[in-house]
Amino acid sequence: MGINQNLFGPSNELVKYLGFNNCIGLSIRLSLAASSSTSNNIGNRKTRGRPVKYRFSENDILPLRLTSVDTQSDENDKFTRILPGDPIYICNECKARVWKDEAMRGNKTFQKKVYSICCLNGKVEIPNLHYPPEYLLDLYKGQSDKSKNFIENIRRYNMMFSFTSIGGKIDHKINSGRGPYVYRMYGQNYHLVGSLLPEDGHNAKFLQLYIYDTANESENRITAYGSRNISSNPYSIEFGTVHELQGLLDSVNPLVQMFRMARDRYEFNQAEPIRIKLIGRTDKDGRTYNLPTADEVAALIVGDLDGTTDKRDIILETKSKQLQRISELHVRYLALQYPLLFPYAEDGYRTDVYHKGVESPDDPGHIHLTIREFFAYRLQSRVGEVSLILFSRKLLQQFIVDAYTMVENTRLNYLRNNQKILRASSLTHLYDAQDSCSSNVSDIGNRVVLPSSFTRGARYMRENYLDAMAIV
Ligand SMILES: [Zn+2]
Image 1 (tube, rainbow, N blue to C red):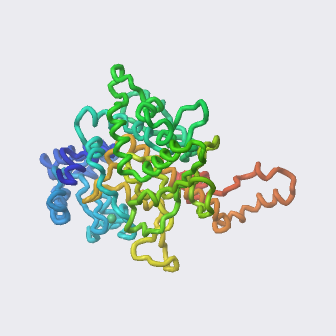
Image 2 (cartoon, rainbow, N blue to C red):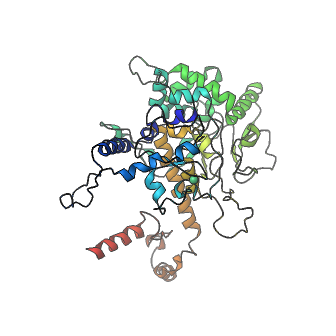
Image 3 (cartoon, rainbow, N blue to C red):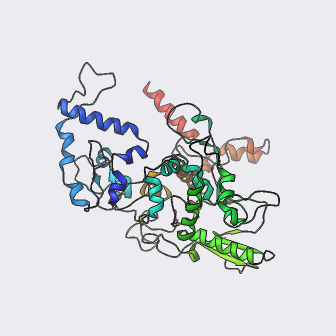
């Protein structure tokens, strides 16, 4: 089966997986309208002021007859079915498939063949994800009961194998009624990691499951996060799938391999203190390389620390009551939380990746890859790339929410660290109050001033309100 058949056949599955069900309806509606009428009634006096039903015209169908799909795809990478409204425009730089309106943004005449939404007009250059293991791909894409069970419970399966926990609070009530699944989170989001072994009297969780009591590992994982009562719930966790996923990650995931080494060492001598260092920095060029080996993701430390620890590294102790927070700028942040989306523990966002063609930090202009650009690139469907992220349905929703909080966290950190540039000092009443010592400064204003450019901040909302009032 060709790569693209995995992505798009037998029907318009990517659109469904992304949850844009309306797009499918739109596509079908437009194709029906095209066969019945070629007129365009937008602006008709009778329909003005009401929602307008768009009639498809002959011009809209033309892009489907362009050769862009045929010329830019290889033999194994053809669309099995194309409907008007499908993402048939392909970026010449990164091979992302984009929809017509995305291609038209700032490009009304279709002269440009490189787009901003995927790779910032070719500036963003990061490697595609590696082709996933066949077993995993079959679970994501297969039609068997096993695959259906996996997809239905994909968030639980992922949680069973993840190394870190999510700190934000998930709103489960929103899914109590009917309708499609919604992942909603509130509170501050962050990822936490614990010690290598559980406290006395506690069950093993997350990364501890890779080291502690591994003779009963599959049972422990299911007891921690799932249910084995399959007869009462058809969507419960399947023991066989957990066991096979465990074997798969043992063979391909370098993080898991390093934790297995720690387990062997612990079982060999339980009195000896061991630590694992999650390496936060890699020297290889992030534009061409994202597939690490076990040595590059983590290190096993027996005895005392040797002084080679970087400030971005995370040291996991054998036993510790404290949970550690992982910075979203840690290169393994995503791989630790989503082992079923990144089975090879591929690099996440890195702060030291330059834009395409930039060789030195002294080069002029905007030279570094930002976290928003990273996710905009990673969340595209591409010719020649099979991205498990796009097939993961409920886990895709979680991934996108998580990504959004990562982007917002870095923006807030920037504002917090650049208050001088943002002229926060011009808010003199804070300083007046401080000088007079007449009141508690912490009661006045905000410690960190968010400018009106920060979306949904107080100043942003006020500015929008004033703009709206000006129009009224
Ligand atoms: Zn592109």
